[in-house]
Length: 556
Image 1: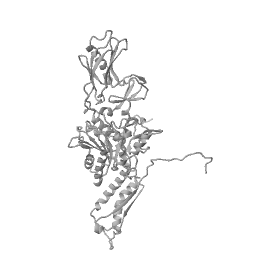
Image 2 (image 1 turned 90 degrees about the vertical axis):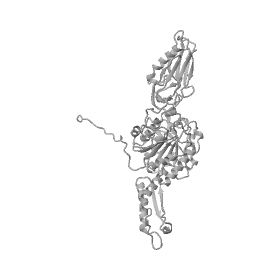
Image 3 (image 1 turned 90 degrees about the horizontal axis):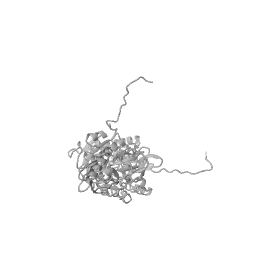
Image 4 (image 1 turned 120 degrees about the vertical axis):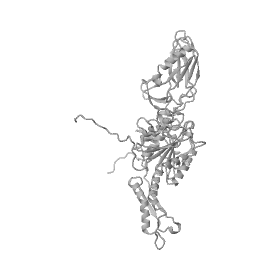
């Protein structure tokens, strides 16, 4: 046994030191008309190296930008009779109950006062505060509900004859309204998920006004120009407070248009789109494979806990069952029925439910961008060995942006969504975790660039050759007596173009390549030198076929 000592364990990832190269440099576009403290209309773009940088810039989970719902009032019009059990219920959960004494309460106000006391006795558990006078039970929600309580029937009052009463109490309900979830929390979630998947990444975050009258995609050009062309992949989160934008293929083609412009300016990138799919059906989504938009991918995945069934007091729950209530996601840790969700003896609050807080699709866009940033340019983000999206808590349940759970989506429908070139999460038999279905772009399957990795591989090759050859622009081209290019000139340009491709081959990003210059081209007349290169890409084992069977003997 060693001598007693003080031991230091040094954390080497707190500063978010970037990796070598630039393949991991990414961008994230958000739309909101209110800026966090570190952003403004003058400085809408910041460069982040860690989730701590986001916190330092005011992107956090404190709900400071949330608008709490108002209303939420129960007016006791007819008091209960002796033996009645009267309850105030929110989203299917009893907040507080009273059993009316013999003869009932003296007045409706007296019963309301008792209900207020019963609700406030559990405030330390559910966070809701009751107050009121003249028969009113007025409820004030804690932070983190957003618009989760804002719907017809969410707030209710019941009166039952549990102990000999008649269940005759009645109340007038004013439902909650006006709640708006925290957009800061949504941004924080996506940025945190990016760095969870790619801790060494660099992330440019841009916050822009909500696009009106329609989405154009201009902001990806603004972001790329701000980053001096360094961004390799960019996520566009199109939802925003007051302007949740339903998915349409026009959004994909709009992004492709600006991506084409950036490619022409030697600043290529790949785009991931997260839009709102609320109210849309997985079985009726438009086909992305007919769009000819190879630089854009549409994300359909979402944290499955957001999509769990609502709590129902009459249901029986077993340990491990998951439900949603209000603005949160819960897991059962003691079997039973009728147990209030807010009671930690029976339920554990596992995470915020950003979907119910905000009322529109959240997606797993941050994790998707992080996976692309983590991948080598030749790698399919669906590679099972490398890209498990779940850490045991986040994304261990698989959902879709439409609110569906994977367990409720048929294999046939999953195959259709795959054929229509959407990116979503799937489960793999006998393998723990959550995985992408593939790396599709919104392009035809017959096109060379229908996968993200094919675009990134060619983008890297073109960027490398551009950087290597740009110094030769307007330089001399020496020719032989017959007008053909001399060998020294050919060798120089071939070597310049060869260098970045050789580096990619050594890194395993391409299988092989070739660079050719035709010596017979008439450079004196055209002042144009044509260099041709071709890549032999790295293949992807999208399907593995195993032939098996019995035999009477094994050949030696």
